[in-house]
Amino acid sequence: MERVPVLKIGDILLVSIQVDMQDQTALALQEDLADRIVATGCHGVIIDITALDIVDSFVGRMLSSIAAISRVLDAETVVVGMRPAVAITLVELGLSLDGIRTALNVERGMELLAQSRADEPDLGLDLGLDLADLDSFGPTATP
Amino acid sequence: MTTDVGLGEPQVVTIAADEDVVRVRQLVRTVAVAAKLSLVDQTKLVTAASELARNTLVYGGGGGAEVTVVDGGRRRGIRIVFSDDGPGIADLDLALTDGYTTGGGLGLGLSGARRLVDEFDIDTAAGQGTRITVTKWAR
Image 1 (cartoon, each protein chain N blue to C red):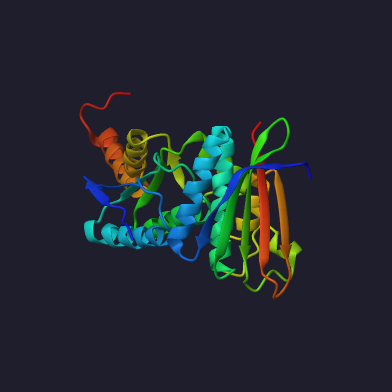
Image 2 (cartoon, each protein chain N blue to C red; image 1 turned 120 degrees about the horizontal axis):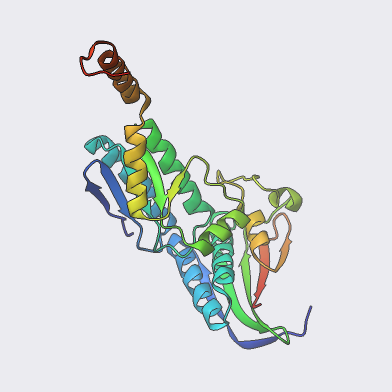
């Protein structure tokens, strides 16, 4: 059985699926990714499916599971590179890919992850308080 | 039925293991390209074949797929017959309902595959195995 490699780039795990996966390969990928998220502490996962010429219900379910598992492990998943014909077929098949974020390519997927990391509610709150303090007490604050 | 003339011998794949589902997908893709199906239709047919081949393996306990190029007069199509000697399907209406599954899947394999092809015929009964015939026509 082939295994799909998981690459670490900064705070992101990148998976580019380049083979026609057997079901067992898809299940192994799910486990490998969960292990790597915990081992690396990465907060983002990008799954590149540019090379996949179909996504059937099994692979669709795997993508949904990976997204759900990542979320529990404090990481966010973005699926990138879906071909137009695959998107059309998925919708007709009846697969909604619930809870999965998508982007058109790896670059946009990385932007999406960086943005949602920056928008984290707790970080935003800290920032807000700091700004308020500056406004109240800062000597350079102007109306 | 139209008066189909089989163009060439059917190509047969035995479905007995995980990797045979991949082989069915690859064969169907090759034949769909040769029969000049559009890219979207190729994708739909290969996806349907993947679902049905997996069903043959998981629910039917293995079986086979037969892929044939058929001539419908003005257009060509691809016909695939999936057959197994498994337990068969007792309640076909239920099995064809979106979301119904006995195997822990999403319950979209059979119902979804039917939506992706032009013709879908199923011959099954409890204890009699299952034979599913699907056809996709070039537009």
